[in-house]
Amino acid sequence: MKISTKGRYALRMLIDLAQNQGEGYVSLKDIANRQEISKKYLEQIVAMLNRPDILRTNRGYQGGYRLAKPASEYTIGEILRVTEGSIAPVSCLDGDEMSCDRADICATLSIWKGLNKVICEYLDGITLQDVVDEAAPNDYVI
Image (cartoon, rainbow, N blue to C red; front, side):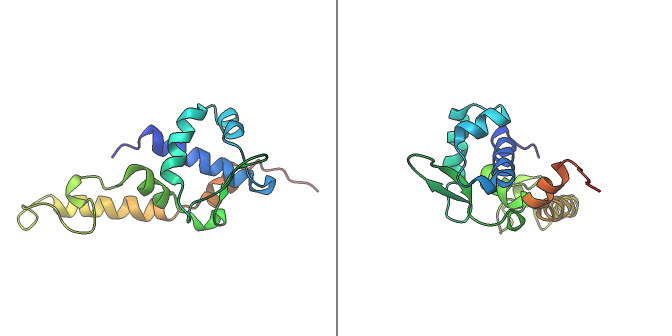
């Protein structure tokens, strides 16, 4: 499994939105500048993520984007499934149904199922908020 540039940049964009959520709607231009990603490329990513359960949009002056839910309610696995389509390590595990005619006799299927389980549990166990918290500077004031 290899995560595409779109998947990686979508994560960076949503993490940026989570970090700047207090500012209201955030423009793509601001995200592009902070993340050093072209605005045009971000527009392609927004088209994939522009669903009511992921992004809220506001057009016009002071328009932009914001997360539809708290950052703690988005998992990295959920975001990657939207951008990548599947995070399964092999194509026969894509989707809900086994798509391989050899599934009944495949000696390696249990390996791929185990790997898929580990990948999904790991990525579904990390939220955007977890990433934001980990990236925050550890400023301690006494």
